[in-house]
Image 1 (cartoon, rainbow, N blue to C red):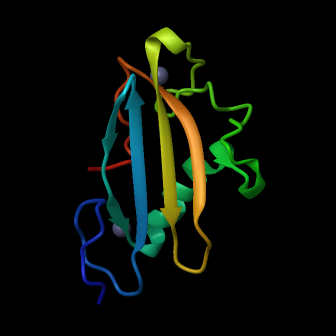
Image 2 (image 1 turned 120 degrees about the vertical axis):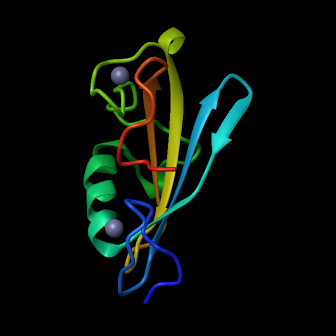
Length: 115
Ligand SMILES: [Zn+2]
Ligand SMILES: [Zn+2]
């Protein structure tokens, strides 16, 4: 049994938890949090984030072509109506992965990034 319940509905599960670290950046502020996923919900997060993946050798951050796409609604974003979002994931059996996208301020957090 994993130590912590999955952050999606707080159900218990067998196997190792994946860890997800989102950060929403607005001006000089960053809202950072951390949540845990069971292997099944890790797939949901993985699939939702994959278009926004930043490759390993692209540091300093080189946003993907989808970086200006809202993570919540899929619409295109502008600097003045959105916040930047970085997500780092540690899923079982994978190396660290990093993602970069944006979120419209009036869209709010997408459902696949629970508290
Ligand atoms: Zn789960
Ligand atoms: Zn949006």
